[in-house]
Image (tube, rainbow, N blue to C red; front, side, top):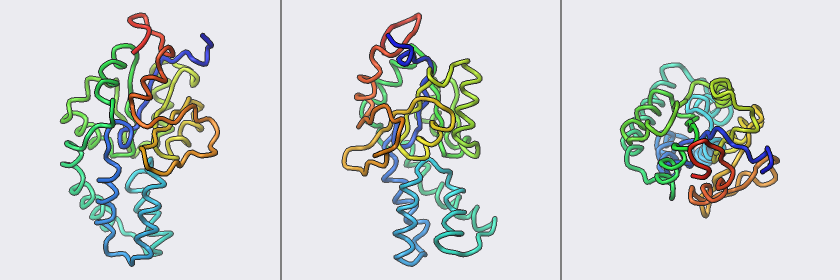
Length: 230
């Protein structure tokens, strides 16, 4: 087996990779910005979808500066964040898993360290994982305000893995960018029927529709003293 197939560390985004939360979060984003004129609202939602790996705070700042072209006070920002969190938190506890996710996490966590790197605020992300009974699968769960690239660098330092031995699975171009910045390998998840935002982007090893496909792709690529495959 080539060294390129020697995988020792797996990093996963959460929204759109482990749980099917993107449609629900998009609806919540639309409701939060329902005060915007229709032409701006369409642009806001397009920006939200194109930047799934960006923190909600960075999205708010960009939207006000570049779409609404209005000042955003700290008080307004916190009101937006509180409204958005109130709309999504309970739903995040019950949204369905991406097909194959539960089996994938159970089996892969037995053979190599798993990490979550999400744009969701870290305390919120950790609480969602705790309430869903997922924390035991992961060595650590990262979230904003840390940049995803910085989280990946911390993981590489902790595990001692080289970038070529670590794989990041994401569903947004921002995830791909974080992989490019850190040199780790990248697999894209594109939900059936969704726009492929990775067309023409170099370094995408494979595009999968769900975690059944990811598991099939990883068979034979995992090295562990405990088990050769997930």
